[in-house]
Length: 286
Image 1: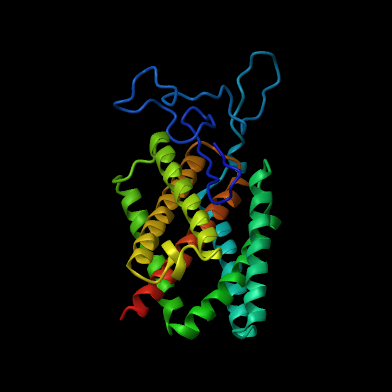
Image 2: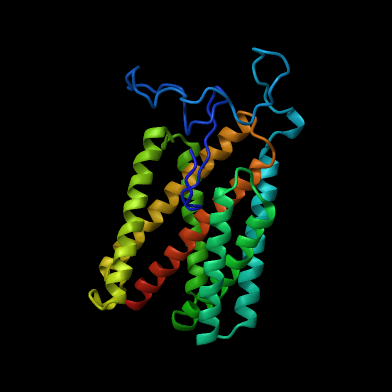
């Protein structure tokens, strides 16, 4: 099921063409009466209604179904827009109070566009690409600021993001992580608790109660929190991989590849930002 938060918005496709989260078939070890062991939805919202009373809904035509090529192209497009926005912001905006304000404004706009997309029933390429563009501007300015103080930090963060993504994909494809409804619920609960803790920490820092950044400081505690955040980013990636795998297997419409690209982009941006902070922490303590 979808969340209204773009960071936590994930879509699962059941083997019975349902829309009930991940792995709607009963899992080993689950009681038969477990409400999460079966698909609580009666119909596939992607199925086309068949004319005639009592006729079962039909899956979308094969020509209109999502494929891996669709996901790759949309993801490359969305991430490409992020990269172009970041490069232009880095090249054209020198480090200053004005550029920091522009970065903050771009982040707010990106968040708003992401929220609007999350509330829409269908993906909007314009909203997704707009989100990617403003997110790119934010990343470009922030990366330049980090680089001006910790030379090479953005490059190391990119390498770290690639390493985490590759490792997560390897673990997922090897079957070491099984994305089930229970796995998703537990992970989301931890993620929401983490976000709430970060909001509280931000308020404490703003009012001077928690000096030196509190949980997000540059010391060992900040490093531990950063590692937890990166692990949560890897968790989001596993949900993205499951979304893509199920969407292709169970005949999701081609337009859903835009949502898959959006989810991957949000997860990768999350990991990159946390990796950037972690690199800065380790560089400060050298």
